[in-house]
Image (cartoon, rainbow, N blue to C red):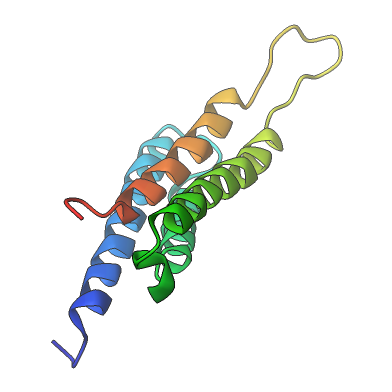
Amino acid sequence: MWGLTPFEIDAALRLLAAAACGLAVGFNRDLKHKPTGMRTLGLVALGACLVALVGLQHEALRSEPDAMSRVVQGVLQGVMTGVGFIGAGVILKLPGDSRVRGLTTAAAVWATAALGVAARSPAGR
């Protein structure tokens, strides 16, 4: 298939799966005319998966379980915290209004990033 290595095919399929998850969540939100739809959530999932793919591909990590563990923890913490800050930016509490707006949007962004990282997870490896 176009001279791609098995790793490249696997990575492309994982990125495609991550983007599909984000697009699916975003499609539901677009149908309900909510902010943060398909494009945004597709990119969030794709970006999270890409960061996880790149962070875990260094050859030296494969022979060092402790180093791999630290990198996995760092990737998870970094992606989820960073995306949490993006999600926090959509939460509003207007003066004089008892309601908080944007919590579902923030949760959708955060959960979509988690789906993107999960798409990277090496099943059975």
